[in-house]
Length: 197
Image 1: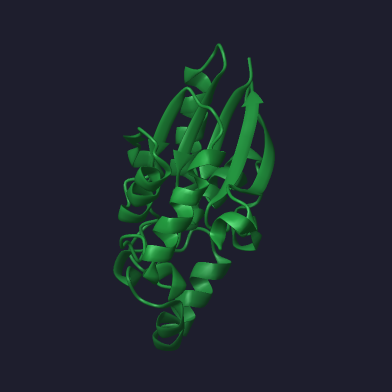
Image 2: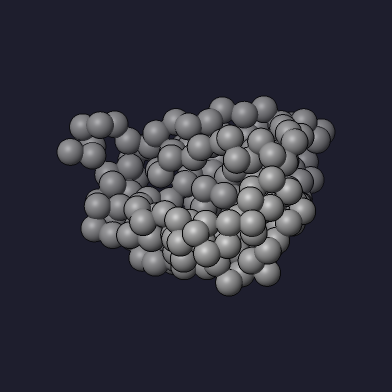
């Protein structure tokens, strides 16, 4: 039977607007308003989960999801870079940023490497597939990096592909599959332009 894993990227907050690493902060007023407007566009699911970040938690609440936290969907651990702007880190540590962007095993920040992130998220994705032998639909709210890692794992893409994937706020990424094979449908917005006015 086919399993569906549907991941929603969370709404905006100030840290995302400022391009901060792991800027885990509550949704701003605009992000919360947009998430509430999108609540009517959610697909049906048998199970609801969310990454335990403040932003994912706030998005799940604003969407009206009665969901459980899923530790495997937590933010990418970027160690000492957490909360800093990419521009600042690039200026202060250009060699470290270059290594991080070019070597998937590199973790100059002291947190998780890209390979570690993809393995963690991939392990969860595989466990969902194994645990739903009779099919099932899982809907979750997960940070964009987690969604990108899920795509890389599901499609067995080279890890460097991660950097070429964009995941916009409040979009739905759908993975469906069975027997270790996944198909992808990505980037569907949860609300229309009229909802966001």
